[in-house]
Length: 261
Image (cartoon, rainbow, N blue to C red; front, side, top):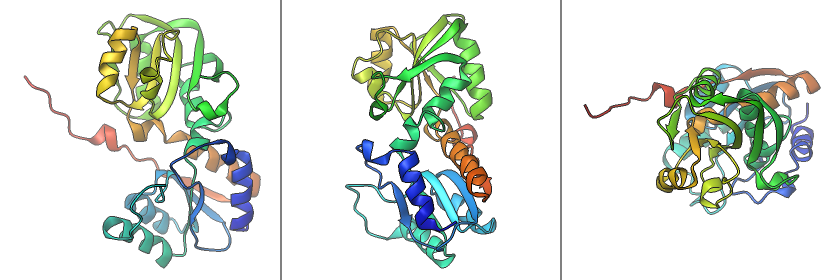
């Protein structure tokens, strides 16, 4: 598969022109002219690049790439090591950020909606994919504990719960935004939802959760954005008969956690 054709296909599939994104979406580092062995990962970390090299990949497809608008851009330090490893091994780096979060078929947000058993799903701004976040409704309510268990098991991560200490509280309606989704609360878009499911949170999230009566499930930024790129890679492997491998890292789960006694 010619890499230029692959990128053109992805640009159209993910409707990239619809999104105002900090990421430079598409081909970020040019390597081989063809894609036969595709490796996917959430982030273009050195761990992921090294694993792609070991797998014999000619293309690495990620959610978090190396090029971000407004960044310094100098190729030094760990950034240099990542770029050098890609170029030395003739590996393409392709990245899609917000377009992959929002995609209704493969995206990170729709994946989270499926994990919690949602039966009705739409964008937070009805019909507008560029609003990124989604709203999801279960046919029957589930407890805080049951939702947390479903997320923990599927994402293989730790889940923090903010806004309640009642694990038996029943929930049926959700705002869903992988990664850093606390902006949904900041913009007061959650009064009609029982809960927000996201990756990480900021300081204001704790206050907004209590003040709006919204339960927040923080699943870990990386953990909440593993499956979108995996789903996309599986689709590409079937569509274009590519060899595909997904790299699953459990950074948040394996971090050391300390609590005051």
